[in-house]
Image (cartoon, helix red, strand yellow):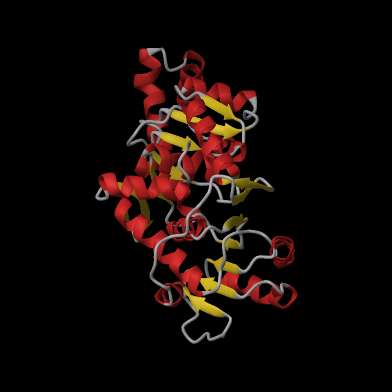
Length: 340
């Protein structure tokens, strides 16, 4: 029988708690979190949910960019026996309200002041919602509301105790619009592992929202299951810089991201001198199997993109346009299409 995601975290924390499971870029530095840290944080959130009268089978939602705090909230919800739904961070207030009502969401984790404003706008129309938890209190120092709590204050109210027993047939997460049991999530992770063949110690950069199954299943949960280290952006605006710095070996992105990367390099080549443009076009035509093309052009392009070490690249369900996949292949990057 496959382990549930909380059980996987517990098992890895017990086996090698000091190993790094994730990092977050913060003020120029990659700050590491160990398996033991992750395990204690998801347990603390589960205990806090219990104190908020959150019961097995209840739904909690996350309205946030993809950050470690959002990951802790997700794992805490699963550990409490709840059903986790990640909402797209760019969802409008009306869309957020509709999701909260449809799922009878009881606890909502919001990233910051911007997301809190959306939640407060629709709160009156969401009768099941009993608590809003704010992950980042920047700009909210004077804010006070009996139905809201900072992440820190919420966790401090937790009730100590053992995590609830979770059965494989219990609902775990809403992924791609469907409620998935713990067994189904485990099966999806197994299938993703077989598709992508990750290795222990691979490094990935999370660039997609947690509402995207490619990030949730083929990213976060696959990484927890296989020992891939997850790295989180300093902000969405620093994705290009963080990609260059991290040089991941394992990278899942959407078609738009690959199209933008292609357009950026192609645009730079078009703006170069005639000789440089001719050399670039020749090297792309020759491909990475040509040692001279590699030495003169392609190695520098991979370095500019942060793809010197890239081993596995993937998108969901359909490949990018042929011009993009052919360009990536010339760089030595094969973009796989996986089923979500």
